[in-house]
Image: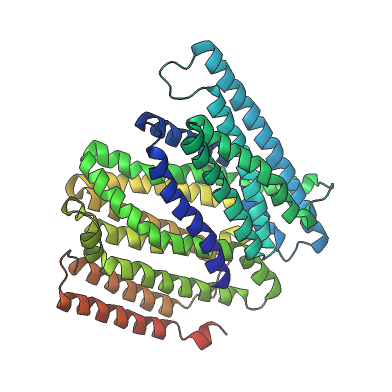
Length: 469
């Protein structure tokens, strides 16, 4: 919980600053430039997935593994960083050559930027991937405050410098991307210094092969999740209306509150999971199962609370034309709750080094989501897309758990998990039935009572003395 709060705090501060940054910058750049900037960040995000090669996940998998000698840990980190540096250089050089060729051959007529902007973006992409690698290793060292300081320094300084260049100097996209690239390059040596104890001039072909073999399927999984994260809006626009896309997008923004809690937990959980297995060989299967129960119920409490008061909250904060987002928010919150459990339900797949299954399940999820959208969107619009998302996340986490129980079974208390699931379903059903934008005292008291009952169910499902023992 402590580490989750620190990791979440770094993410929260950077997101708040980003939220303030873009409306401010929008005063100084055109809509066309703003759109171009978003497209550039989307493209370099995809290139970053290729540069990463899933090595961050691979290092987290092997670093604290019970079969990994302490002397091998620096070799693992150094070998993974070497591969990632080489992949970053290759991708940056090839993409940079294409950028320069495009600029010379076709010019930049009609574009709100020139080749420099794209080159800055490529430098930022590569350097930020290496900084993120260092941040993930810092988490493996269980140094959350170092993570906090480095994360804030990297993200905040880049935004502040970009804002100064745009507002005071009159720069445009070149200033925004150039500032981000410059800060990333300057922060990179500090990031590497923080993990210097694991940086050695010793590399292992065997470890490189093992790391890449485990990590590369995450590239395909990342592409699948990128499609899964965007396809609902595309299908809504083509099968329903742009207005429904707006309703869905507003609800999705509110559901990100639940996602924020999930991501904070994930930052703390991923490095400690393998260490738990190494240090508790007799009990880790029960510990993992209990963490799953606790995470499920706590995330359901967070998501259920937001869902219960979705109507009142949106009614107070947004004009009437956005009120339809309230009922859409409920299944989206449920989806995020289910998504959060994947961090534990996939642990058996990770332990057994079957990362290719994660990629395959991800693409199956894309197919499931498309089919559900085809079925639900024509009749229910944004609500249909939201329920398709929730059911898809249920499919993913249930499939992960099924494979985990087959490959590396956890000591799951099925009676407690089923009882908790019934409580979660009941809570979200109450949220749906009582969803309204008007403030009515009797309805609010009913919702608070439902929340109290759910907490009682949680106390029954999670008798903490037993669960934490």
